[in-house]
Length: 215
Image (cartoon, rainbow, N blue to C red; front, top):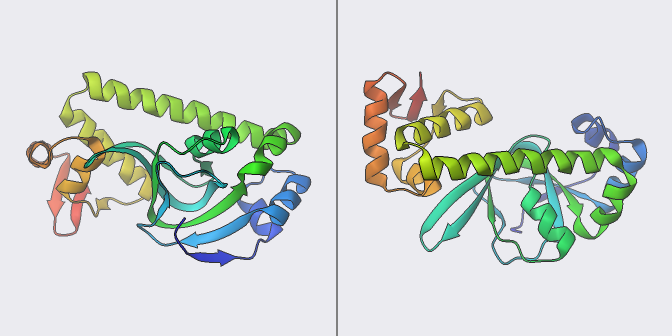
């Protein structure tokens, strides 16, 4: 991981974000885990990297994607109190990461040591439940991505992408460029430009100086 600000672990602070965790689990995390503040646009995981720490996002937003050559494909976003199940899987099996992860905005990350998780998920049902829920959520999201790639119209894909990003960031105006949308959805910039113009004509969005406004 890139260098960023490391913070002292505070049990009450962890409990505030993860109220379902027991005092015993919080104590284990406080002893062995880390909390780090990460600026926007920082790579926190890359393909081929072995996983030493599995993140739980306490605040902020992390983008998880795969890359082939110059093309990227967005897999999912990790929001508040969510984790990266791909990191969890690689960490438990001691296999290299198959994905990339970047902070989409400034984020507060709780890093759980991968070598402790095998024991923790057995000892503490709420932690096991959290990752089980993440498996279910990410599996559903990736099925949606595959279905959209195979069967979805680009107009619908781009509009749903904008709606989801607006929901996750809590913003009506998204600071996005056509090139970025094209990279994340695995299409050409010219296609994005054409679709956005059509969505604007339909009154669903408005392209403004600061990016794209969702109507």
